[in-house]
Image (cartoon, rainbow, N blue to C red; front, side, top):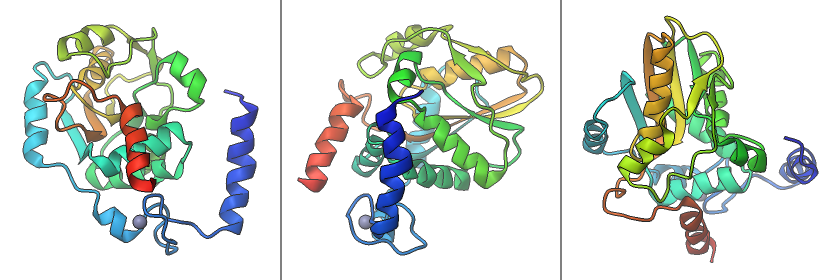
Length: 248
Ligand SMILES: [Zn+2]
């Protein structure tokens, strides 16, 4: 999507800044060693892995899974919230590199292709990129699993899922996707940034299976482990709060 302000930022401002100023940790602002491209070792070590017991309970909550396996790396904690906010709202694309690398440690390599859950067309038009696709692309670069861009197409502008209950989420995404490509007999790795109730990933997996995919692994970077106790997990609010807590 052509947007002059974004083009200038991505192709002029960012490269110049990264040339004249040494890279800093995105979280604490300390100068980075060459080997740490996005966050320093100290901040990286604070990104905790997801409790396997929670992943099991999430699997159990999805009563009719269409995917064959589910992988989730992190709890949706403060550090993750902050990083995903930078990627989604502040065009810090290096976060996708960090996430892609992280995910690459978790997934097996026996896939025919990797693809991402598509954004709402309206959201894509406004943002100009799909953060999950950037993560999938990085993972593809590392693992050499071929990336299939735009394999899944969102047929309509579904309502944002953040304020909806589990049942409402399921209804909201029902039949919202179609595919644009050949998946017959293929083993597919399907990526999303955040999984909450699993409705979106599951609906995408259903579409892939319906069209003949032989195996679908759904993989997300993080899941809000307090979702079922919380009635408001708006990421925009959370991101803004995080920015205040960390830098203000
Ligand atoms: Zn740091």
